[in-house]
Image: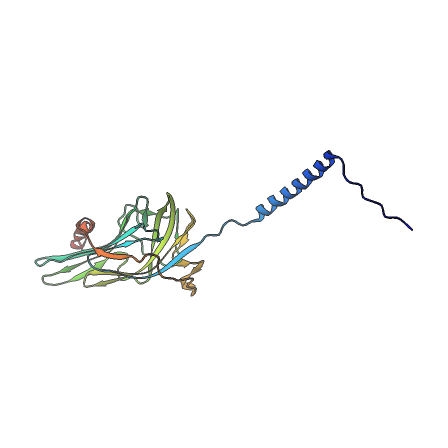
Length: 249
């Protein structure tokens, strides 16, 4: 019958430290492997629904990410005339330094994007842009016309660049524009932005899905509903240059 052998304790401090060091190296190597396999943080899109009308002679302040800071202003200018031509325009302009609108360079026009267009660092942006403009001739032959990239466009997208803590973020706003007798108004029905700085977003994309695929994503009450306010004289001053365009038609 064999007797059980007792295990001898490790009395050498050097040997114990050697085993401990080897274990630490193995654990460290495993940790590095796990970090290497970890996927980077996924982009997160925040979408909010809206139902905000932009009417004649109103300025609608627009807070895209709901932090209490106005990012853009929609300006709907209209000037009635009793003895000549009435005219006006719908435009969008930045409210904070660094914010910009996707469109032609120089701030002349804001693009009316279809669904699926990339909005990001490679896009062309300007601080502001005209969306639509129109005129009424109050004397014979009493004609009325509308012009611009947003004229009578339904569910088009405005590409937006705005700053959060000094870093650029990208987003979109969905609007439907209506032209009636030369007067341009609009309805803001939704907007979204990318939470990761310098990460592009696609127009119409919310929570990873495209609207034209029938996947509407998560909708909720806007954190801050854009508020219409009467237009100031300074903000409405941009309407005058459009008159010369109409007279050349």
